[in-house]
Amino acid sequence: MQLTPAQCAGRLAAADHGVLCTSSGHGVDAVPVCFAVVLDGPSTVLASPIDRVKPKGTVALQRLANLERDPRATVLCEHWDREDWSQLWWVRAHLRLRSEPEPEPEPQPGAESGVLDECITALRDKYAQYRATEFARVLVFDVERLVGWAASTAAPEPD
Image (cartoon, rainbow, N blue to C red; front, side, top):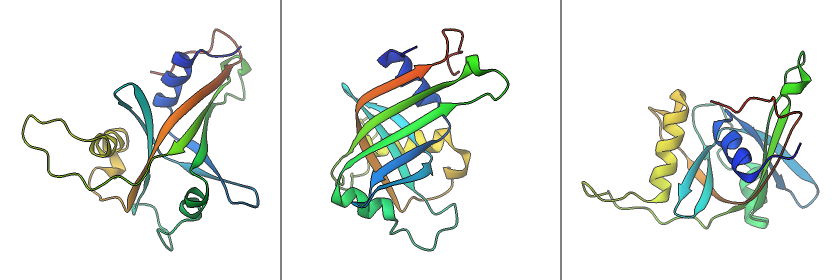
């Protein structure tokens, strides 16, 4: 059954990881990523870090080159239970990379923080491994459209 946009948003926000797909110009590059979902006024954004926690030869990753060429991307997250297919579901988020944000000044006490700060906080809240590290970069995407499917209405909503 097709999921409503609200059901898709809830499952996307609760997912612990997804697969980010970008266009290389020669095909699709797909990589597993961590992400967090943040509301920015009426918009929903998805933030995915370029971290230094997991070993990498460089932080000049192929996905960055792909996004410079084409700012569109997709994240796919899903739930699979090999024993109970009534629990299957997936959500696909169609994304567009935001322009690189300007460095944000230190927020004044009581002042609202910017979306990049909110994204960093959301990533650190969601993943304990990020709490004591700096990111090489945080990719901030506008969520342009959500599409999802569930095997049945019995599929539970994520916590």
